[in-house]
Every structure is written in structure tokens, then in C-alpha cells.
Image (cartoon, rainbow over all chains, first blue to last red):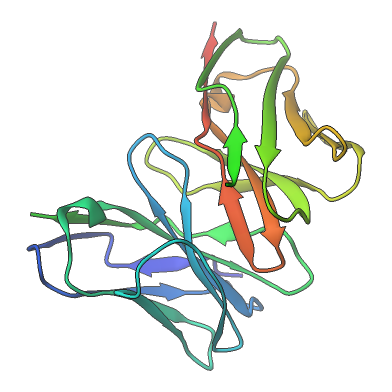
Length: 112
Length: 109
């Protein structure tokens, strides 16, 4: 069974640009969540998707958006990048009957 | 507001026992989880408590008291590989998880 894979692993963008991060869920998982983790902090919940619908959202502005595809893979899109968006972005997947989330290794985004 | 409090750092000796506490204040509560994260790595699920009491999984145990909005992670027979950050996380709804800021556990030989 494969785990959660994220791409790219590292990314450098300029302020004002847009970025798309990708995530492939673990086999058998139909729920995917995205988190932002600043250095030395805990992951901050961005949003969650279940069966291609957003079913939970944290305190992030609308310029953070996402998609979940029929194969349960997912994208996180961030528009109008700001310097404070620099962080590790983590994707996590789970199944409906399992409270444990499997995390990917993350995408390290640097905004300059 | 919603908040989780846990110590920022804990130091322990190899072979000993350590307890990491977590208190929470959230608008909803479904359960409490613990995750381990090594430097540069992904968070790894350790445990989940929905009901009061102690859950044991090998060297790790997790406890929850819903009436006290409190839980802890207990690590026994500490090994050097247990050096990592540990996060408590509250499921405030069926689709939203709030993480604490993490406890950095350092283990001395």
C-alpha cells in the first residue's frame, strides 16, 4: 500500500504569484486535508475534502482554494502569494471510519 | 476562541518514562489525537481518544478526561529514536482538526 505523496517537495515563488500543490492520497482513503506548518509550530488546518466536496475549512482567506478529484487526489491553490505564506504545506488522507490521518512529507514553499 | 496548550520542551533520560500534557478549549469536541514528527519528516499518527480513560499501544499510552478538557501522552522505556516533536490535536468537528504548537522531546543517554 502506498502512502501519501506530495509534489513538488520544494518550491520558490515570488510575491503576488499563484501556486498549485499536489497530493496523492493513500490507497483506500477518500478524505484529504491540507495544513500549513510554519517553522516550530503545529500544523494549521486549511480545509478538508470528502468525495470531491469541501466539508471543513479553517481560518484561511479565500485565496486558498482546493480541489479533490474522483481518484481522491487533491490540489491546493494559493493566489496572490504573500511572504507569510512561506511554510511547509502538508496533505493528509484518511478513510471515513478511521480517525488517524496519514500525512505526506510536505511541500516547502518559500515566497520571496 | 479555540486553543490547545502543551509544554514547548521536555527533556528525559533514555529508558525513563515521560508524560506530555495537553489542555484544550474548543467550541466542539469529538476526540483527541497525538502525532509524532521528527525533524524534516511528516507527522505520524500515534493515538486517538474519544472517551475518557487510558489507551495503550505498546510503549505509548494516551489518556483523556473530557470533563477536565485534558489529556496526556505517556512514553515508556524511552529510546533515542523517540526524540521528536509531539502534537496533541483536537477533532473539533467531524471534519476539522486543531493542532497544538507541539512539545519538543529531547532524550539524553
